[in-house]
Image 1 (cartoon, rainbow, N blue to C red):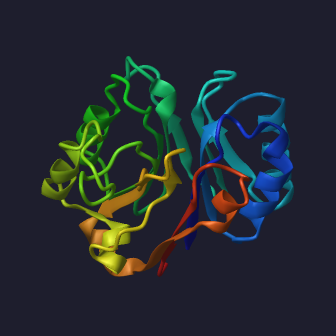
Image 2: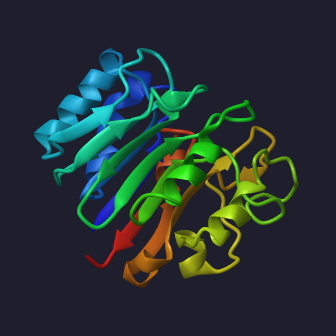
Image 3: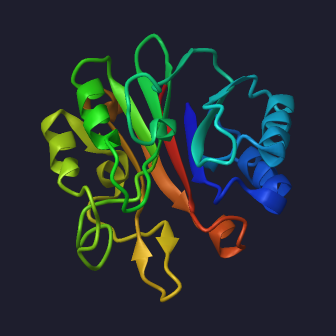
Amino acid sequence: MKIVAWNIRQGGGSRILKIAKSLLTYHADILVISEFHNTKSGSTLKSKLNDAGYTFQHSTTEPRKNTVLIASKIDGDFATYYNRIALFPEGIVSITFEDFIIYGVYLPHKKKHQLFEFLMEEINNEKAGIIIGDYNSGINFLDQKGDSFWYTEYFPKFLEAGYLDAFRVIHDDKKEYSWYSHQGNGFRYDHCWLHKTLVSSVKDCYFSHVERENKISDHSIMVLELDF
C-alpha cells in the first residue's frame, strides 16, 4: 500500500491541473491532500482523481477553508468530526479499514486549536492509527534548527501512546525539511506517525522535493509505503 500526503497551498487555484498530474505520477492507493478547498478548483481536482480510480473521496464541505481531502482507491468508512472538535474541526478527516484507521490532518499554523488533544483521545481508544499530513509543528532542534514550534510537547505523548514517526523509523535523525521560509529556513511540518503494531509493515517513508522546487506547491510531497 502506498499513501501520499501533500499540502497543495490554499486550495491549488490555477495550479490545480499540475497538482493533479503530479499526484497521479505516484500511483498511490490513498491520497491525503491538505489545504484542500471545496471550490471550483477543488471540484476539478476531485474529478481528475475520480477519473483515475480514486472513487472514494471525502472532505468537509466548508468552502474556501483549509481542510483535508482523502481520496482512495480502496473503500472504507469515512468520518469528519464537527460534533466533537470546537476549533478548526475541518482539520481532520479519517478513513477506517478493517485493521487500521488513517487520520488525514491539517493542523493550523501557530493558532489555538484542540486537534492534538483530540488525536490523543482518539489514538488511546481506537484501533491502530496512521496520522498523516501537515502538522505545522515538529520537534524543536530536530525538525527545524530553532525552537519556534508550537505544540511540540505532544510529540513525546505520541511516543508514550505507542506511536512512532515513520520517517524516523527509516531515517533515524536525518535532517530533511518539507517547507522553507522566504529566509531559507527549513521546517519538517509534514509527518506520519503510526501505531507500533504497524511499524514492521513500513517499507519506506520519504519526501519528494521536486514539486516544491518547481513551485507547484510550497510543501514537499510525503510518501509512505507499507507492506500490505
